[in-house]
Length: 325
Ligand code: KG4
Ligand code: ZN
Image (cartoon, rainbow, N blue to C red; front, side, top):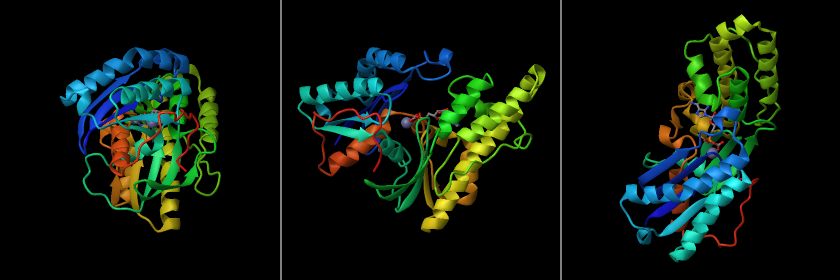
């Protein structure tokens, strides 16, 4: 069984073919947002429109199969930017209709969950999942694949969003996560003591941390702003990582579950991986190519649902605020 997966919920136009293994995964990352320091929704939709057909064709070519060999077509239907989602969703529905094959509407968050398991063989459940991306920061209990409970989430910014905003503030550009990680490599993570905000329970908050960094940065003179950029990056990254780790440890203590999966763009962060691996013996992370948005994770989730005999009606609508529960 082969599933074509299409992802366009933010600034990656991606398509992949999955049959239990990834046969192809073509990712086009939109670069036109960089000069604005963040994703511009209108530009994202237009760029997806230009690229989606070529990216899908390339994914079939690279998997060395024809469209008639595809057994189901999956696409993200939320959450994300409405105009961006609509491009991939409409393309996928039309294609499914044209070749008379089932359509599978995939929740982008479930896609990220699947990303951690691609290429990992047999994985056991229940398992706690830390999802940290540009749009979401959540702790999810995976009872089994397809059955989830959200145990905690951010009450304001997502972790990736905070990294992106601070990166823009200190002049490191977009996307912020990799830029901050890179600058932090040779920085002192104890130079500045930034807070580890805690809104209670298993929820996260990053806006206070962001403001704390802003105030410290504003207090530096222009020479210090340059000479301390690596230390600010390292200290800020450490605060983000500690905040994520702290809640994950708390969730593990509360549920008695110490098997972990980490996903979402921020899961690419090496400092986060290092700290989680130090604490948890059984911690699974996506292979680097599946950490940030990609079609393979959507195809893998679609494959799972199609195998269970499920499909979605073509009347299903994009839902920018879709949640997992
Ligand atoms: O999962 P993703 O591609 O898109 C969303 O669903 O939001 O995540 C993108 C986010 C961005 O905020 C980016 O700065 C962050 O993931 N990110 C990282 C790293 N690579 C990407 N954050 C920390 N360290 C990284 N290496
Ligand atoms: Zn994502």
